[in-house]
View 1 (cartoon, rainbow, N blue to C red):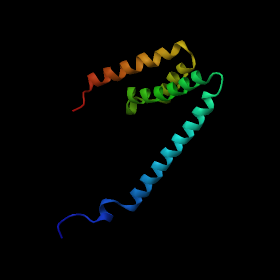
View 2: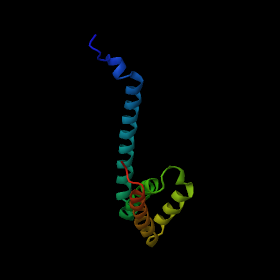
View 3: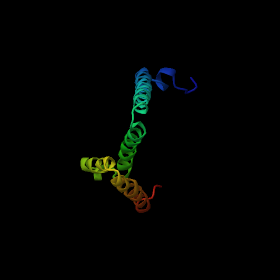
View 4: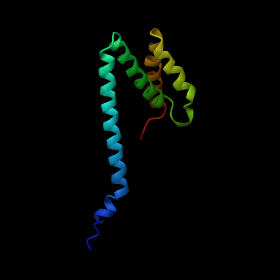
Length: 111
């Protein structure tokens, strides 16, 4: 033996199946997003609706990174996502959350 692990040890079937299921889920999500995006684009308020939905996703990611681990609470998501619904209030999460992420990185630099 040369010490090289067998294929079964390097790529367990359980991990392959889980990875395949994850890939399938991502593909189905992409298909559903394209279907919904097409339906939204055909509506009278399509562009505004699509941008609003995109901001909902972006703000969720910003909240996730702005409030790490134990600091993150449900009301952070709820409050900042509510700001997306009000046209002028969208500036609050789009300005404050990146600022908080940058300040946090300055206080806790990664190795």
